[in-house]
Image (cartoon, rainbow, N blue to C red; front, side, top):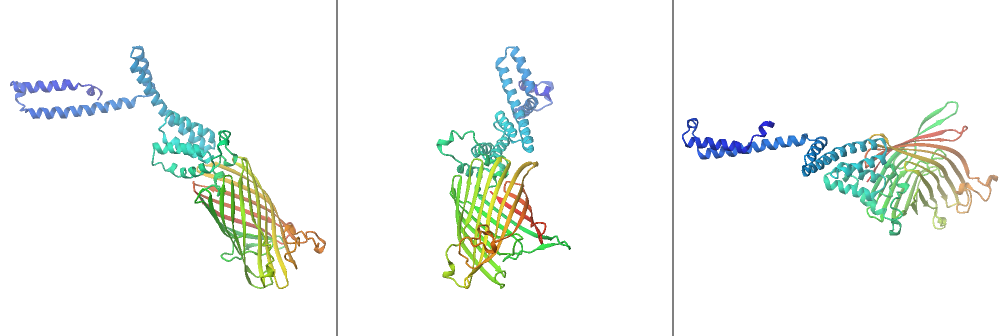
Length: 518
């Protein structure tokens, strides 16, 4: 093929003309062929086209077989012969081929680092890959994605746009770049702080993708979970079994919640649940709903809304009753450089409602505070305190049956997104104490009467300052979260509540849940 490709087109045409001239002059060799002028032109055109195709094919084969080493050697030889211009072209082509090949190798190296969890090394490899081959879209996509996961949204957007410029149909980039645009706007700092913040990445943004499952910073966040309760009685018979939680919709605890943020400054939250109130007393709340409007002010998110609680049972006055409670409250969420604070407060209605109501009423209160310290990007720990109060008031006497519990807990979360390829993992462990309070008082609205405030009683009923306290339990909880894609995740947890060695029973709860975020 190589020898044929060297055949001169001019030589071939000269032979054809000679044959045609011999025909015209009556050459013996050509008399047996009856060529016409048009026939010769057709033959010339066909053969020329065929030879051009063959030569182009052979040239492409020669070029494809060239490597950076072969071009480098040829450039050296041409330089020795004084052909400096051609030598320079060979060296330039050798560098171009070398850069393309090494860019592919560096990309594969970066993928290996990413799977192993060495994100900094992966980013360095991808950056070098795009430096050597600025048209390698797949490396720009990985750079954008990893910076997006680390909270560097400006870089993420820059790399993502470059990838789409090269490859407009890149689906991977399109799956996260819109959220990166939104988060980039949220994290813009004041002009006077920009220079000091150039090389600073707040710890709370984290390396792990799980640091970014944040309902306050996404466009939409929704979860649903349900719990199965079991009990164990360590008496002589060692009885165990399934424990029902009587509610309006289900006989087991569940929680459904969702955040939606349609505007930069405004968002909404809603929840529907049958709360788990522990083993200390009967089901004092059958269903609860909460609706809030959220206002975003940089690192601070302020919420205000309505909490609804419903009771359907017979624990008060030994008769079946359906009671409802509605109250206003709010929430605060603040993100510091290395900590997060959450506060939820829906207070008891302080008005003397027995003055304008008769019969029985239902009053509730809820307080939660959580402080999270982000020790490392993939390791955080937190403290949590909470108070839940439920009042059943008989306005005819008047008297009140009060049920409440208080939690104090510490916990830690470890995130790992390299243990299984393509799966983000999060493990949370928590240990806490719970104090149950049960008491009946004849003055529901007096101060420090054994209701709430850890059961502190100024009257010292039964001779105790904390006469309302009933029993204490220890709670251990272990939770696993798995995120299989950019939008979907699942979680499971096991809760063990121990009421002491001499308790009538202990309880453990298994919870299953799933969520969606974008």
